[in-house]
Amino acid sequence: MAALLCRGRGLFSGAAARFSATSAVRATPSDTPKVIASFPNTKPHAVVDCKSVNGGRQLSVEFADGTRYEVHASWLRDSAPTRAGADYYRKSATDDVWGMGGLRISCAESHSGGERLSVEYEGVEVGPAGPEVFEAKWLHSLAPFVGKAMHDGAGGERFIQGTGSLMDRLLGGRTPWYSGVEIPAFDARHLESDLDAQVQFYEAMICPGVAMVHGVGTPDSLEMKHAGAPLEAHCEKILGRLNQHPVRSTRYAFMQKMAQPHSLDYDHSNPLSMHTDHAVYHGTPGFLQFLHQAQGHVRSKVADGLALAEHMRLEHPDAYELLTTVNITHSSRNELYTADGSPRNPADPGSRGVPFELVHTHPIIVLDGSGRLEKVVQSETKRGVCALPFSVYEPFMAAYRLWSQLCEDPRFVHHFDWPEGSVVVTNNWRTLHGRATVRPEVARTLCIGYANRILVENRYRLLKQRQAERANPALDHRWLTRVPNQALERMDGALSRCPA
Image 1 (cartoon, rainbow, N blue to C red):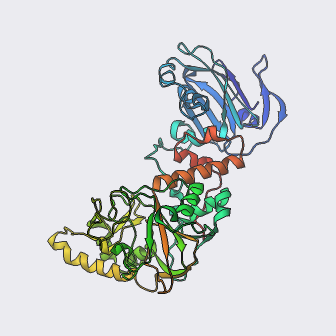
Image 2 (image 1 turned 135 degrees about the vertical axis):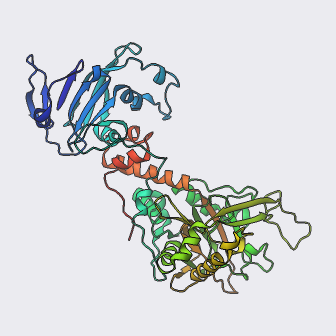
Image 3 (image 1 turned 90 degrees about the vertical axis):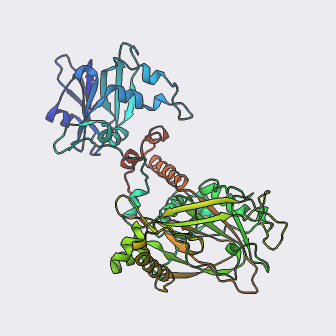
């Protein structure tokens, strides 16, 4: 055992502790460590020393990377995986909070070459308790957020701000792309079954923000209620269920090339300018957009919102300032679907849609707290009445005209072939798309679904947990769930990089 204490008494400290971190030691009557065997461990998270302080109410833990923290005994007991049941909920809604008064550590030791820490408690309320074993990597990852740093150069306490996301670390590696980009491609069956392929797919959704999935297949029927079956089946295997529309009967939009289009949105003879979807929805809930070519082979186009924004920032800084700070409104009244959720036919006086209002006021280019691009919200057809101040209106509209023209600039627009049975997936917060070119003799059916950012980020979190567990089976789901993203990121040793 690399370190041992009982009844709040440390057996060794300083240089002796650091030496014993690679050794098994036991207490002798003279309280002098006796070297039994050597277990070299150079991993930064290995526990090299532990001792109780403040009467056992805290535990001081030193790691192999030289960091040292004091953590509360009650925090250790409260945070242990043993507090949760098989459903990952706490076993008791009251005992964990009410039963820790007077809790203190009676014995602690590191073992397995510093990879684990065993702790015993005693207290007025809880009485003697059996040892709980903690994974050192788990403790090392959480220590900066919950412990009192005692090592040189530690700085002040670190506070976790907000939920965060494991995808946040990919944002700094994003690079703009232009007309010559090569869109990443995935095979549907491989993507559905392979953990690493799914991780690569979700990282591709951050950079470059668009991908093609081949082999999703075609539906048995092209009727609206059946046409999206291959898309839904694929998404449920790699993500979950798609967002549900407020009125539409299906979780996917349904578009067919026909002589009498149901609406301007679905009129293939009325091509849309480059845009993002869900501009009229507050917060832009459609983070990922799945477009399934259920019938027909077409040619379509995409553009990179990051490249457009960077061009504006570097070449037209005054216009960029307006586009990132001035709020405009996208709004519409949606009457596209009838009471039974089927598409309304405007040419039929008896076809009445169920109306609902949508409004979203925001900058065209939305930046995050670090000044990085968060999302582009662009849809000229759904731009509403913009209540711009008198002094701002003319300069803003000049900036917006420049921006709108840039969105169609051939330098930024990538054209690609889109075969039947494949799915184009875009990061709707980054990638703009335009209406596909469909030859007159080609019949086309398209199904479109959306997934919100929370669902996507938490799917990526699950995948990264599974990769971490595969790399270190001892650090299994019991340790990897129920922890903040900021700590989980520290447990994931191989930080993902944005794909080239």
